Image (cartoon, rainbow, N blue to C red):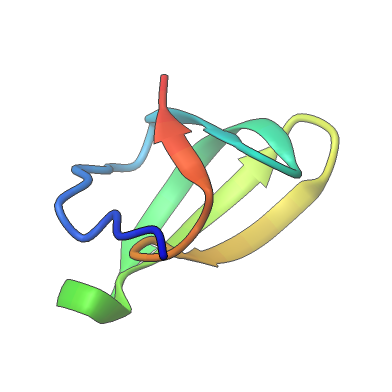
Length: 59
């Protein structure tokens, strides 16, 4: 299982998701393993992702 627990993300970062493609982080909420990335994807629109397990990489 994927573990992005150490991934540093902040508002304004660009990421790529395995299914949703590229997008921009608009906010990060929560703490530790429960961090949620609020992302506006270029084609998939607005999504909330659990950072720890989402199939994402920082661009």
